[in-house]
Length: 528
Image 1 (cartoon, helix red, strand yellow):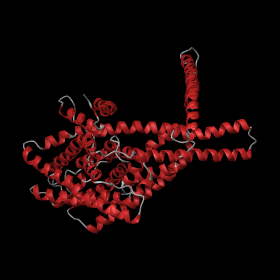
Image 2 (tube, one colour; image 1 turned 180 degrees about the vertical axis):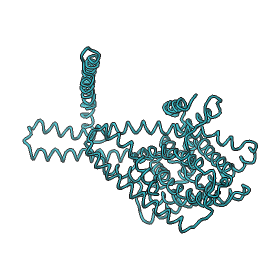
Image 3 (cartoon, one colour; image 1 turned 60 degrees about the vertical axis):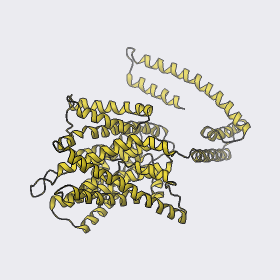
Image 4 (cartoon, one colour; image 1 turned 135 degrees about the vertical axis):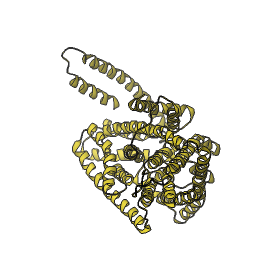
């Protein structure tokens, strides 16, 4: 098997792992990691030869962009306090604790190299968190915090990692320079993200065609990442900024086709890239195995100690942080998503899985310092890092569904239905307002006006059938049954039309481009 065949196996696994995960109630990323582990120990599977410095730029931008599309800037600002406590403060504390323990237990490991290890294992993976938590029916407030933590903690961890690596390679370290680097990296990233977002928004209007617009969105996350890195900014933060800007300002409510096609396209990208990313995590296991040759007992003990530190620090941090956030929340009456019970706090604790970023950072550790000497204890750092990744991703990922079920942490469906009902009312009222404006401008027949009033009500009822009184609901259900019958008949008519057009494609002299254009028109008509 060559590298290309291996890539196809991973892509196939990414597709198949989704229904298998749903059937077995297991997260698809965990299944892909297990598949990668199996492939790593099979003799005929080649070693992965992706350069470490390309793993983050290739995999992380589209994954972050797809994740941001499911959220909003308002959600981040509403949760800025818990996100800061987890994505910035907790990453820093975890790095310091892991660095101290690793420096103490690994003979001869310099403190700067130990801190580099702490930085690369500190951030929970945003893809793993959202992919796992999003499938378990957790309360939306927990998913929002996990998404915010996962999206922003890489920014902090990567900057701290580069500072620690630079200290090892150059042999010098300045706290003031490190702090300045962190601030400048964030400022440059935000500037690049906003500028690129503004430019892409204007370019979207110029392109017009949905196919070209969606193709542009695939280039956007890579452009944001590369441009920010070129200007010594945070590529991760630049991708987040650009994606949030476009989600806020580049959405045309009437551009139905682009929105539907864009959602389908990014769902496919998210599924495939996520599968490949976590498959690579399992495949890179051979690196750790080769490193530990002859020293399994000693190195497994070091890895277990660091795993314990990572897990315990998250728990010991979450308990007081959640309590403090709840106290401040009660005093200031903020509309903020926070865990409301110890059960939700435990679920948040156990959701701290490591993944793609940690693998890429571990493999990207330089081989030599500026003086030409080997990077101190690089093999040991890589092995410990993979121990943390495998333990948190596989053990926590496999047991999280059981823990959620055991603790009874579920989404508040009543609140969600209430919000859905509220949106349905607003949608129906907006439709009625527009109808009154049209009636004031045009002379509508009474029969047509009454029909439009009923359709305005139907807009809300189709979203939330609980709206309206019993008689209205019965009348709506009758109209729905009639409409379904009309749509069924119309669907069969359109199906016959599509079959006739497709058959014409193989006739002599038929222009395939014209046939496809007519077929596309029929397909769009079928969506109405």
